[in-house]
Length: 125
Image (cartoon, rainbow, N blue to C red; front, side, top):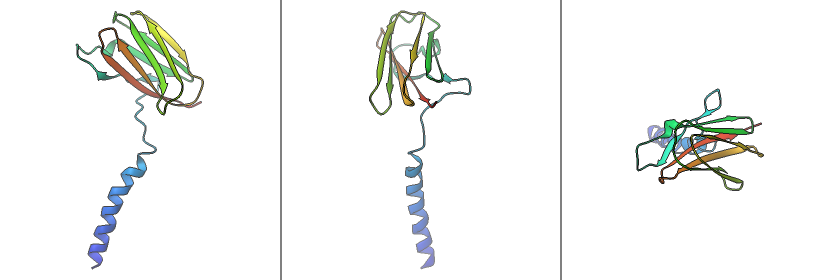
């Protein structure tokens, strides 16, 4: 009888612990130097994520395009909705954003050929 109670307790614990950790987990992949990992969202052509470099330093987001990707629309928005900034820029070029509020953000890059890339980051100070 005791074995069944322990087994039930362990199974319940295994089910609920990952759910409780989900609230603190962040998808942000930013290294110690503020470089944001750029990932593919919807890419039908040859991946060009290596040509997009984004860094966050405090409230300043800097994006640099190292190759000619045509016109790129850059959208910065809060993960939970709200504040959105959009900028369209020719490449190779760069663009800067000042992010006023702290929180979790996503930056989305839409290339003129329809390919979409993104990166996630936090503004904490």
